[in-house]
Image 1: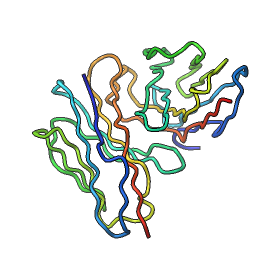
Image 2: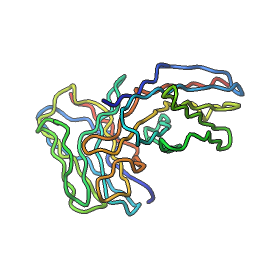
Image 3: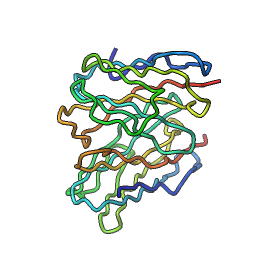
Image 4: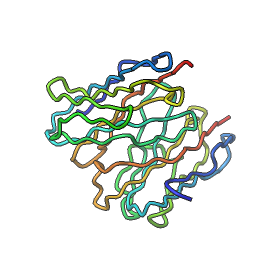
Length: 115
Length: 116
């Protein structure tokens, strides 16, 4: 069975602090994809990154960085020098290449950046 | 309009009403999805359409009825809903026509539904 766990329900940081959002996944498939989405108060889920299971290189995009470790089944997301606009709910998701329901979301981490 | 749009953004209805949610994608995608997002729960996939054909129905009650007249439009018809159906309903689309759900899904802003 597939599962995504985001153990951090809510996080608050002061502006300019770094923050890491944890994501742990479970799957027996060897081919899978991992995603991060941002959901601001407006409600729309905004796509941030997609990573396949064969690419363990970490990725940096501006203030965002992702650390993918297959050994620990984790795909953590770090925001450097956080800003108030980063306040949102962040979802990690898993997708596997089989028929049926293939997109599994975690319960999300609500991030509040305090000015 | 760009991306995925949804109307209405907010909807309040009684249990005996009939209403419809509309989703339109402007990305040239071939697959469309309905999700339900309730407080403190993971997103629940409701329906998947690929090239206008329903390829997935995740045991959703019959009071929810989807319709996909073409690859750009998706509707969710609602009738005799229950208060527990109150939630944010999100529409998404992805590129693949083969039902490959590993494609990135792009979401609309959602419809906040309240059932009284």
